[in-house]
Image (tube, rainbow, N blue to C red; front, side, top):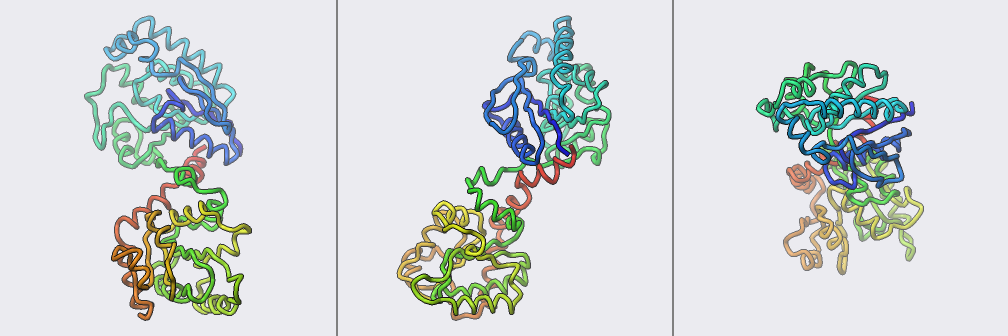
Length: 404
């Protein structure tokens, strides 16, 4: 169901901060899911045509507008100027939030940067039937993985920052802070949802829409390993040997994906070799594991597409039977992608002893365990964990959106 969502924070882009960046990305992804989104902040400006932006200066940190008032709040002095500030804030909320059915409040109810807002929102929520999500990145009384009760400045502050809004959904960004929040707020750990921060992979890695759509449509990012061969389908590229390795690796990694970039030759007939490849795939039941880009894309791969395939892959197979150079050695190395090759003399000339090369006269059953050992190393497993578990698009769709 389409929601009309307001996301609130002290500030938004172009102010730079982790929360500001995440809100921008959340807003765009929620719009992509069909929702209408308005970011409401005390300081900021419109930076994206994808969602609406509204600046209400009274929502920013009070220290930016009234240093004396903020110092009084820190000292536990709540004079008439504070009371007036809360009254004005409540009037603003009643006027500017009424059009929304869902409110997502980032950090404004858990840190004492604008306690007048915190008090006004608690009052506002008493008469609101809107869906309210209290999104906590930080809490004044939590530091790292332990409580920080020395940070309490007044009983009023403590009450406002530790009182929960009835029927609101509480969200935090890790299980580490979830455990501490359950000690600060009158909520159990199970009452506090964990929605990890993530990374917008296609934007961060500058992945083109068509490469990203390929990976998303086939759910490739969640598979390990992703193996890439930047080769045409001709006999000297030794694809059959790569397939034998894939068949062996599948015993350990049943969900692996092997991507072959090229097509058959336009200079001589290589259809017979393609038939051998397809027969091997069928006989060894590798149909779900193999991806021929020639069957998935209606345009040739541009250099940036190839670079992105290297970047998204766990390793490259380049087991040519003969080469006079070997451009993929340069490409994989500059992309910092793990490279497995045959032991051609020219490959050793280009890569010295820095590349991992194997004698392709050895049976695949002997070489595959050596590759498995390398793939099991921490750095390769970490890349898999990050791309498969912290893709922000998946997090918003599967973890945040259901809370709406």
